[in-house]
Length: 392
Image (cartoon, rainbow, N blue to C red):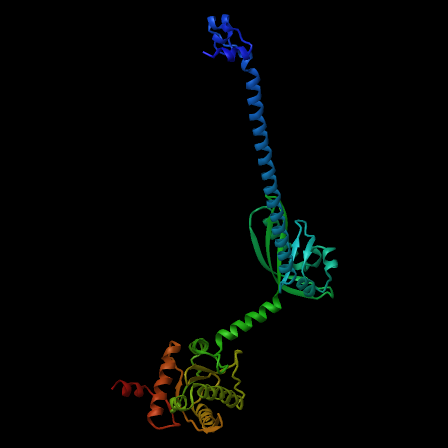
């Protein structure tokens, strides 16, 4: 119970001091709480809680907004960088590139396409694909575009002709894909145009590289193998035809590499290639990568093959062999030194017994080893008895 001084100070009567807090005597007797007494306190607590909640919500919204603004700024910057990279890639692409509306109008073109077709950028943007497409190729091109718009194909590639500003036809290889909106609506075509003349030139260069010996510039093993296979096909179609294969190997070439080094050996091989070309040309037997009748090739190391498809008589073949040996026996000026290197040559005349290139190459190789056994600078014509001697 509170002490008398306390309830006196609070101006309570003694009966009030004995009542439970917030209850009148009647209420206490009835057991019912007096809510009005707590209401100011509850209001204060609720106000403080609401104020704290609103403060937290405001801070959270402010923080979220700041992060959202920063994220949006980052995304915009990345988008701008991507657009700039795309623009630079398009403008500086080595082939023609264009963005084309579904209706055929140009939306964007690069410099390579302008140079290919002879138009300025402004002139192309003012026209459409149909106008600069050759009439003979227009329908097939549009049919492919319609199929792509309908979702039947995702991309296509065709050979077509464009019309240059001066009226000439430009053969090209066209590759097309389609960019769509998020809802699937077509946005624009992405067209890549490769000058077919340049494409053919590149293909020729790749083909030449695949068939050429990198050191001497002559044909390589795979190339001469295909040429001999082709020659055998002609022989089997016309039994009266014939041709010769020469297998050339240099005597004591290993000594050059061992004494002067492989660089000197490579110089000798390069000069050999040049001498083979010049000697064959003396008889108008041009050695090149075109489809001539007579070609030379390097198998590897110091081994060479010569195909004489236009020479079918043994005396004529031997005339060329002797000329080759004389030319190859001339001194080589390598690293300030004069080197004399002879060549052994095996000759095989093609016949019906040769079904594959490997067989006539094997016969020429056998003849070459018999030439070597006869001494430096010799040649031999293959005879079946040579193989029997080798087996013995």
